Image 1 (cartoon, rainbow, N blue to C red):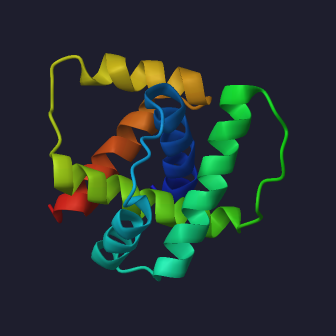
Image 2: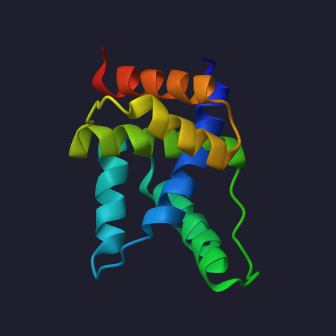
Length: 132
């Protein structure tokens, strides 16, 4: 799977995941974002900008509003989303279960891609995250 497509899917998956699970706010959220950026080896300013874009998108979605969303290059957002999903996998671990394909199929349908492409994405993400 080409890098550009992995990044596009990562951004779709991250937006989907956050819309379903919500975004948890805490007093030291900025510090956590900066710490995660350091671990992902990206500039903290970019990570904070990415978080601001995602926050505003989620807020608009949750409240049905159409407030201004800061601009950030979608390509770079996809790269950051892919790095973030890898980071989450390394931090929280990845559970491979018998119903993984079915779960992947549900997510794929919801974000508008094929199950096969989603499965390929998951394989690539796990391979890249754990350097297999």
